[in-house]
Amino acid sequence: MKTHRFAKQHTTDKPFFSRWRALGMGGALVAMSALLISPLALADFSRLAQLQQKGFVISAEARLIDAPKATLGQINPQALRSPASVTKAYLAAAALSRFGPQHRFTTRLASLAELDDNGVLSGDLIFDGGGDPGLTSEDLWRLVQRLQQAGVREVRGALVVNQWRFGPVQCLTTDRCEARTRVDNSYSAPLSSAGVNFGNWCVNVAPASRSGQAARITHCDGPSSLVRVDNRVITKPDNSGTELSAERVTDANGDLMRISGQISTNARARDIYRGASDSAAQTAQTLHAMLTRAGIAMTDAPRVSAERLPQWTQTLAVVEGKPLQELLLRTMNYSNNYMADVLALTLVETPRAELHQAGQALEGFARGLPGHGSATFESGSGLTTGNRTSAHGVNVMLESMFHETALFPSFVAAFQSPVNGVMRFIRRGPQTFQNNVMIKTGTLNQPFAVRAAAGYFRTASGRWGVFSVLVNGNARTPYLSWSDVLAPLSQDLDAMILTH
Image (cartoon, rainbow, N blue to C red):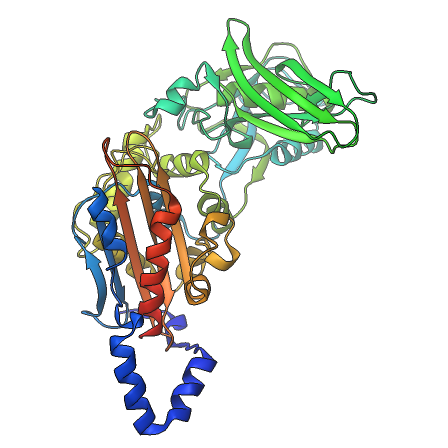
């Protein structure tokens, strides 16, 4: 069995262990007796278990990695529950196992036509979406620059954004289905292998020069807006405060960004992101504007295609995305649902992939882990409430990745340390918990409450452990805040860490 090299490292709470050594043998026995009757002796999930009295169902398990039967606490560990965004930990494990930490997704500009000596391309310019979940405007600018370096000056045809790998993907959640006509967030964008900026429109809101005037709104990637804008933002005097609300609505004329509120004359400009109704079409408009600004003329309007490209297509420009290990940092730390589901779709080998196939790929990964047990995945993000796994299954996956020496550093780095957490709500609990735990959380509120957490911990003696907690409600249970879960969980894990 492979053992991760980090498992041999030990850290100690110096004040705790210094006091222990100073007690001597007799004092140590007295201290041990006191420990057995102190709150630290409750090194289990007894505090977390109290949520069951309010009607919540729980699957929880914590155990040490270096001992086969070193279970420290458990509540129905084999019971299947919704993991919400803890699903992303499975996705990260499966993607690293499939592609490796340094894998980069490739996006290219290609054509079926030949480029003549005058820089004229007599045919369509094809944007071949490679399924990069982290593709941004910066990458598009690099593509345009490399197209210029290839000598392209004019396209006698159209820009064709091709999403043959996947897209448009069938919506499985209420948010994504409703986002086809209206959306007030940035995470419900439709999925595509040719999406950019996480499928979002971005506009920049800046104050006008004088109070009472309408704010200045432009597209984040240029001097003018690529999407229609309904500007309802008024400039207010210095230090009046900035309050903005935004939604993207879609009508017969396409997408429209409706921005309302106020901005102070001395306020900084703000970028606002809202999901587009069609990610590939948004890429087409964005890239077409960049090509035009670069002086590359095109005779036809941009369009979107899903036809698979012939193998003999000529590549004109290529850009490689960030390494997978960097994509996972953003996917996991910020729980980016668009990135997670796009990355899950790249696990499907056949074209025209749908989310249920991505879920099947994750299920296949879980089945390959000895002792995992049953699991159902309908997405890689965890937004779909049909996802089901057990605390024991999650821990099997976590422990399996711990023993993957070449993958574990990239995997565990995508989890958050509570004391430095990007998500501020996890910066709570005892100091030992905050400093000795790496955690991934999951949250759902509809159609029922889910609060899930899983990850790794280091004990006071330097031993590695894994934990998973899946708390699910129903239509009759009360609202479940994160403090309701993290307060008892942090105390339970704190006791486990200190007593081992």
